Length: 269
Image: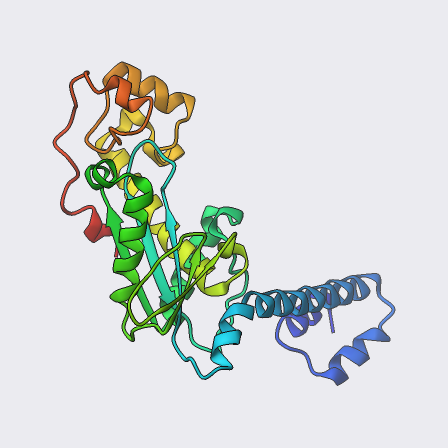
């Protein structure tokens, strides 16, 4: 066999006999392919163990006969502009999603891939989008709590337990466990963080088309220098949070724009 044929064999679940046969092949190219193959197997095994550890909290409840355990997380508490997005996810007990982790630790390309996989494998997903007006009215902490409750109570089936990333909640007929750094400790919370982050980023990319001078697609509403300069030059939009500094100090400037096109959210489906 030539090197190309051997590479194809190793990429398509070779049998033990095939692998043992290749071990006796003295060609440097073959041994290099074998080394890469064994390294890949080792990385796969490590990922299986890592993911199993991320199901520790879910398994604790599954082993008690509690079938529906939800994870809940948000994206967008800190930015000066754009919505807060909260998501809740229920995963099945036989779940495995390669690379699932805290959305902040993953590239945008990988988040998009994981978003699709979570949507395909989750038992249930809810998303709640909170605009700047509600954030300013309730404050970001209360807006987050209200939104998390909405997401959790609207899951179908209704979760018996909810794992939440570092937020206290009290919901009727639902046990709540708040986990510090939960998005890197719980697969369910990590899945919710992916859904929330990707949804919010897509909204900000759409808003960038309406307000290109602000650079929303790049900084996603956070206080980068480009963003701050644009606010100084053009004033805040309706998507800026009036209760946040330095927006609060700039609110005397005239707002621009007529708001987001109603078709924006439709493009995110």
